[in-house]
Image (cartoon, rainbow over all chains, first blue to last red; front, top):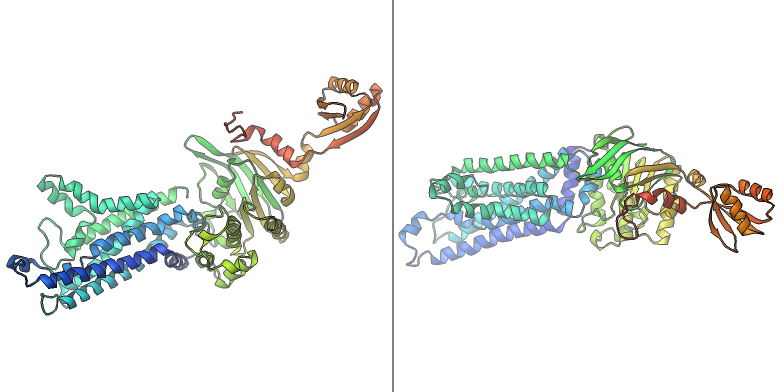
Length: 264
Length: 305
C-alpha cells in the first residue's frame, strides 16, 4: 500500500474538513442567499420603478443591467471572506492545527492543499451564484428594462469576474487568518480592508483619492462587474483583478513563511 | 526510537525546556514524569515538529518529524484531547486524518470500535466528555498502526475502568515491540504503568531509570524500635544519622542503613525490638527530586531555588 502523504491526499483530507463543519455550510448558504436574494430584490424594485417619472433619461442612460443584477455580490464578499478566514482560524481556536500538523508535517504542502480546496470550492460557488443572479435578474428585467446578454463578451467577463472576485476575497480572508490566527480579529481586519480603508481614503484630497483608491483590494469589484465604462480614476477590469491577485499572492507568501517559522 | 538531543526551548524570557537529552526505546513503556509546567508537553510538541526548538533537535527513527514521509504510520500521538474541531463528528475527524495519510476508512471504524466510542462516532466532538475525547485521541494515535506512540497525560478524565484499560493497553503495545512514551504529573500512575521513567523539573533533566532503581537510590528511612530510644538516638546522631522522629513508638532514621544501625545498637548495648527498612515510595522520590523545581508550589507563590 502506498501510504505516503501526497498533495492529493492532503486535498482529500482538507475537503473532508471543509464540508464537515457548519461554518462552511452556513457561509455557502449565506452566499447564495445574499447574492440571489438581494439580486432579486433590487431587480424587482428597478423594474417596478422603471417607467415612473422620477426615472429620468439620465438615469436610464447610465443604467447597467449587469451590475444591478449582481449587486448582492457586494454583500456575499463578506460571507466568503469569513468562510476563508474560519477555514484556518478554526484550526487554531480548537488547537486542531496540532493534530493536523502531526498528520501532515510538511507545512508548505499543507497550506497549498488547504488553499486549493478553498479556492476550488469558492470558485464553484462564486460562479454558480453570479450566473444565477445574473440570469434571474435579466429574466426579471425582460420586457420592461433593457437587459444584457452573455453573448456579449464584456457582459460575460463581468459575470465571470464576479465569481473570481469572490474566490480571491475568500483567499484574502484565509491569508489574513493564517497571519493573525484568531477568528474575530482576522474577520475584523478583513472587513476593515474592504470597508474602512476606502473611508480613510475618502478623507484625503481628491487627487490623492483618485490615485490610491484603485489600489485597494475591494475596489475592483464594483466596476469590473460593470459592462458600461468604469470611472476614469479606476483601472481597467483586468488590471483591477491583477491587483487583487497580487494582494493574495503577497499575503499568501507572507502568511506561509510565518506559518513555517512559528510554533503551532 | 525517539531521540531528544540537547533540546532547549525559550519563550520570551522563560526557558520551558533546558538542554534535555534522552532516548526513548522500543519494547518498554517509558514514563515522562514532572510537575505541571515542567516542560513535558513542550518537549512532546518539539518531538512532533509542532514547536521548533531554540537549540538542539529531536528525531524519531533517526529523522526529524517534518521529514517523515508517512507520519501517522511511524508515530501516533495524543496531545491535548480537546485538539479537535468541536463541530465535527468523531468519525469525520478521523476520516480527515486517515485521508491525509492514505489510511483506508475501514481502519477508522476499527479504531473507533477498539477504544469503545463507535456508538457516538457520528456525534459532534464538542459534546464529548473529557474521557470520550481522550478515547478519540487514542483512536487517532492508533490510526496508522504506528511503531512509536506518544501520549500526553492520557489518564486525565478517564474513569477507573478506563485507566485500567489504558494501562493494560500500554503494556500490550510495548510487548509488541513498540515505543511507548507516556507523560504524567502523577507519580502513582507512573509507578504502575511505566517500566522506565524520565523525570524532569522546570524543563531540566533530573533523572532516568527503572522504577526500582529510582526508589533504590533514594534515601530510605529505617524504622527502629528499641529498649531505650533516647540513648539509641544519641548514638545514631553521633554517627551522622538523621533521626527524624523520636517518640515512644520508635525512631525514624535516615542516612544510615539497617545493618549499620543494628551494629551501632549492638555496640552500645541497646536491645532492638524492631528494625525495618522502609522503602521510599516513588512518590517520595519524586517529591525529593523535584522539590526545587516545582513551578507552582502549593503556597501559590512561585518558589525560587
